[in-house]
Image (cartoon, rainbow, N blue to C red; front, side, top):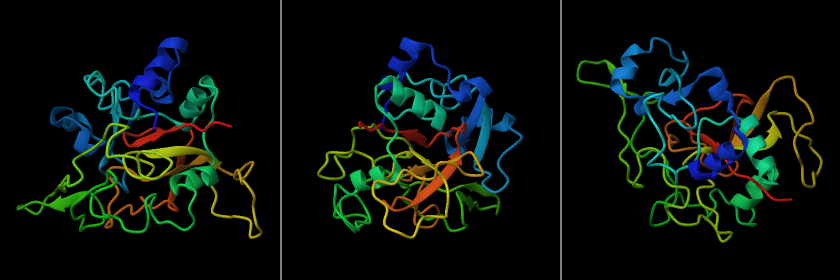
Length: 256
């Protein structure tokens, strides 16, 4: 995963402005939003109300204008869009991996693995940064003693409540890759579609065009859990608009 330090080099060298900076807001998981700031936010995403639109949130200010990354330079850069990720990789002389390349790399060249290391989620020790603890109501809100909704507790059995450094927890496969699953979602090259060719594809690169601006993301994040967002499997996928960013979405680059 590309770190804050690496993305800082890119911004310092080019003066690049991310989509979140241009829009002056981004989506932040409620558990990361300072309480005083949370009180001032009156909107959320109806279907997933734990995602809050925070003015001034961007890659350098992950929880809003009063936050910074000075102590998090080894963590993955977040609040970056597909457009931003593509621009960074191009600057490095690289590119975003295709979805097929990403899955091949995640499995370490093996076939059929559920996770990069094999088929057991926890093979004796935690290998990925995901949410531990129950999410019994189909989301991240649990009921308090008064019956009101409060954020559920992440038990942090893997050692992390939210983001982990990009080189932490050890390589997930024999290719030496860290955090292919868990930690942050990762943009890939492909446009999102659910309609795939039925014949054999060699090095597929996804559809040339679709009816939307949705791009594929892979790997799940620190928020994934068996009760909700069970997408830390190598085969799992999701999607976002190409200009969107969130506090659990990053990327890595590939070399041709």
